[in-house]
Image (cartoon, rainbow, N blue to C red; front, side, top):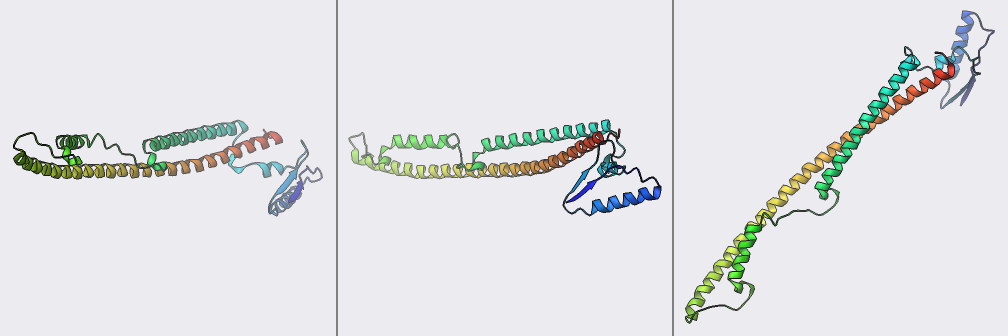
Length: 227
């Protein structure tokens, strides 16, 4: 910590003396490693205090212009924050559409796509209850003859059902693959939005620093009453 009391020294009048005081002031200030504490009496501060406090970025600006710059930074910050909020809403919307992204199990509605196949299987099972281990049914005095025919038809029905079940599994697999593809696309979109938000948040921090710069400069200008 280095301490300075930058009061105006009325004894120093010559140009050489002023330059020497400026040099000593500069050397002392640049020796600070961690922090420096400067005091000065109001209305009787050193001529070098404004040089130390003024930000070179605003050397050609008056207080009103700096106020305008600050307002512009605040407007830009609000715009960036609105973009961040909009992106976060998009992420929530995507996660609602694809809850698998937040750990829920895979959700697929297969009923509509497989309904026709399921109806065919149900109709065959109703037509041939023997498929569910019911006793063989015949409705004729020629039981033996028709029993053989029915057994053959049941066997055909079994084969048809096996093929229908395969078709059903294929459709479900396709639906799962399509869902996974959509989930991956959504996951990449979320990552892209999160990356964009990370950049926007960094931009917000940069703008905040610029706002602080303008506020500090305005505070120093008012303190020194240079304008």
